[in-house]
Length: 405
Image 1: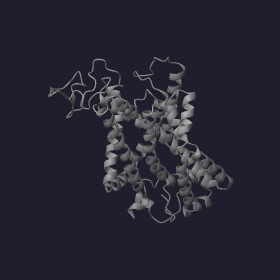
Image 2: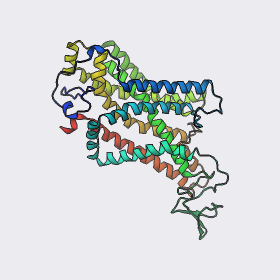
Image 3: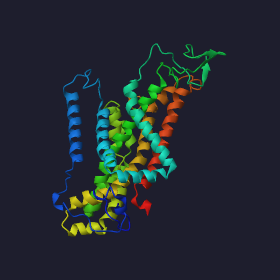
Image 4: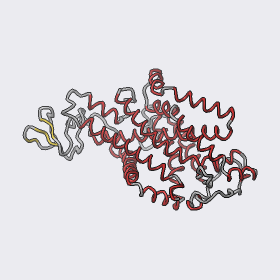
């Protein structure tokens, strides 16, 4: 990555060699300059085929299948779930695949992360959160009102007065119902297992994180790099547009739009995703302007490289780490916003968000008695947001090639 002193570019050949990336400025690899601006490697084609498959399946689902028909394996995906599938394709091909194929770079990142205990713990927690949120809803299913499950069962290790818990699944002693392993985290007022509610709430948080990142990263990167590359009136127009974007309150836009359309998670994701990237675009522009002054960029231009080639091979690789780090710090805010809107009954009532569960627990007439219904999801939400922030801070250092100097 290029630094403020004019370091070397992170070209595709250098990504797997962190030592070479941190040497003084050198002439770029000019082989293939005439290939044009568009990438032609297998990863790009595999990604495009995946996108085409997802878009084709989405079109078939919405134009051919009836409302009760499922596309495959009993899946009946809503719009935000299709967006989530698309964002997972981006994550696989542009995050996981580069880490797997560039083992030396991955080991370098891992070594840096191990030197930051809070970042490492947060990363491991987020990995578990991701796996549970991905697999859990498919194993446990969606939460539904369980007529035959006893309501208001306390978690294991806690108890509740038998006056309020009329049917107890665990041991009853001293006029109290004790929690049982049948419902380790208890049940809510409708007899729904809290574990099922939490796991589905984790899926919603993942959808918010991945879909918003999928929208934020390309928008911020494109606007920031174009503004830095072309400058002049192009820069002025784009940055004034960013200024306008940052003064538009996304919350009020969402409130207005949801009165026109039904409240839906995809609506929330699109509104906040398209109105939240302005500050990141400014960071990208600043980084890209520094990269434009580097000697290897000037050498590439003197060798006949076009603007689009320079942007793809030099500018974007040098700003993408800044984008990823900034998005990682912005995503927790969007998760909190979604939970807050669900808590205020302004979100998707069918999304089973953590905010919805918290709201249901606090709105009961016996909140202190049934504390676990709102407290457990609130603790999970807080821990997740803190972990994302800590990991985002650590990620900025992990992705910085100057850290080993």
